[in-house]
Amino acid sequence: MKTNIKLLLLIAAFLMTLVSIRPVMAQDTTPAVSDDQVNEVAQDLYCPVCENTPLDVCPTKACTQWRELIREKIALGWSEQQIKQYFAEQYGGQVLAVPPRRGLNWIVYVLPPLVVLGAVFLAVNIVKRSRKPVKSQTEDSSLPSSAAPGTVLDQIEKDLQKEE
Amino acid sequence: MNSPVENQPSSAPDKRRFPWLVAVISSLLLISLLVIMGLWMKQSKITALEIGAEVPDFTVTSFEGDTFQKSALEGKLILVNFWSSWCASCDEEGDALEEVWQEVKSSGDIVFIGVNYVDTEKDSLAFIEKYGLTYPNGPDLGSKISHIFKVQAVPETYIIGRDGTLAAVKIGAFESTDEIRTLLEQTGQE
Image (tube, rainbow over all chains, first blue to last red; front, side):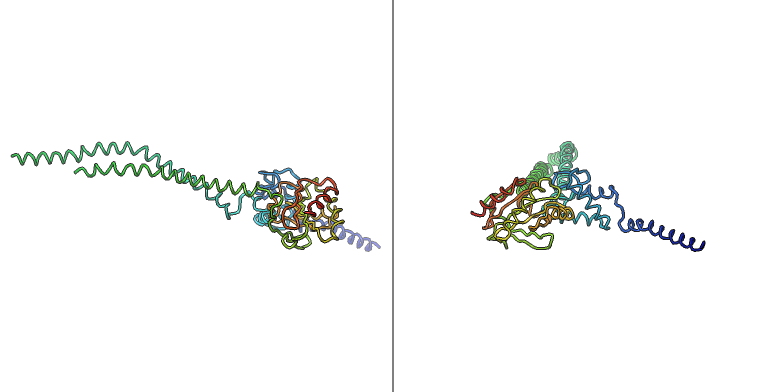
């Protein structure tokens, strides 16, 4: 009798353990995704409905749905790049904070460095020009003192020799 | 004797002119690029389709996988309704559109197409099920169709005439089923 009770208790304990393990297994297959993880992706995406609002701070219902979609994709193991590509395909390239490098988008990448380079080039030239007049004055004044007097003296010497 | 001294002034002005030439050229380049960008943005954002204008060809693939191409539907009256599950006023309109669709679908002369605007598939399907929409509905992949019609907000409805031109535009939700019927009658007679 006692052995039967012990056996029943053992079976009950085993079943209880199984029941308690099941939710843990369920959690393992669908890992919880934190808001920080979602926002890390969402901050690089823009709401196309409300202009100039990043997805991580956008308060609309549409943005809430999209953040939930990001959460689902992360839980499925999608990378940040894959999620961004999915959003661009679904809603268009304008949802990306960093526009894709194609077509007229290249202007965004090429123009600022060109403007900076041009500005640097101009600044360097302006500085050079502001220094040049000082240099040329000294060069001009040095020419007659070093070269011209020499040649003049030679000429005078030659003239004197002729006269002699 | 004087050649080194004489050559100096003649070469100096050329050197001085060079930075200004570069400045003018780069400024012109910058201005042209900004003008191009401005024109591109203006064309892509603001210019809306006008009534009577030819509607460019587009294709909607429904959530069920059926394809509807505008050019293949020529000769029929096409009602294109842009909606979203997150749009509050789309709810009532969905009911009204479905009611009218039930009345006209048997004629085979009128086609209703729901275009799901910047929405998630899960929420869109839940919306379709909730309001029992039976006319074809599909996502606007890449926002290409809404870009053609220059959709600013939802709901917006466009009726394409039998000749493929834009026949009518309704910005905002339809207030009643009668409003939809009247619009279809008016555009169908043209």
